[in-house]
Image (cartoon, rainbow, N blue to C red; front, side, top):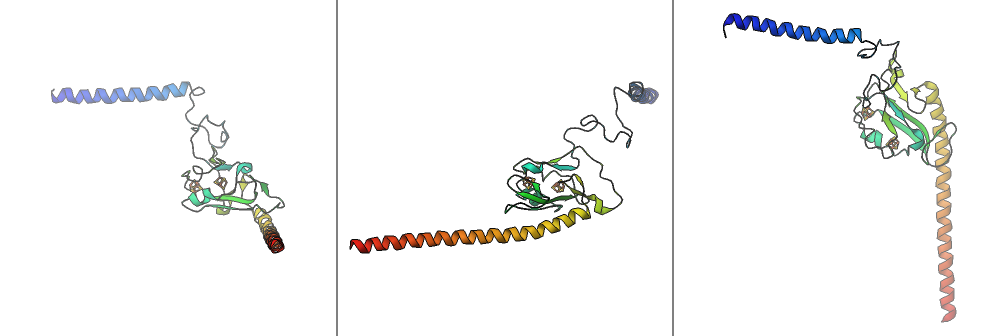
Length: 207
Ligand code: SF4
Ligand code: SF4
């Protein structure tokens, strides 16, 4: 192939690719309603799920709190330690969320630290923590970047005050539970000793 043929051949190739590219652009331009590839951010932020994001999109987490057993596995799996939770199995707490046989007082994720790796969701034995489709958690302060998964809202000072009050309740409940356990243990021990003494008396009577 001569140098001239090579030169014009390349021009033809480039021209063809430009025409193909512009054809795609034109197709989207005239069918913009059917084949939407971009959306106007803000006005269409809450577009129907699945329309613009793939189902496996790792967005902001949500929790099915009623299924959660507070096993802490998700928090332990998190490589950046951005999950925190508190709760009790010792009794009812004012304003807490009912999990699976547990009262949940706190369940937050610091999205400022989160790397959206999904490692918290995979090992959950109840499959109750998920990465959703929501992607906007923009705020003017870093404090608002912490999400309360129990309210599905940014973590507020009011949340922290309520948790502090429930923490005091948890201490009282743990104390009551401890005393109940000790009483039950003592009663069991006394019953065993009584039984043993009765058997010894029986043996004495026989001999
Ligand atoms: S791993 Fe699942 S069940 Fe366990 S604390 Fe986390 S969300 Fe709850
Ligand atoms: S997605 Fe990754 S970094 Fe974010 S909370 Fe889950 S485990 Fe932690």
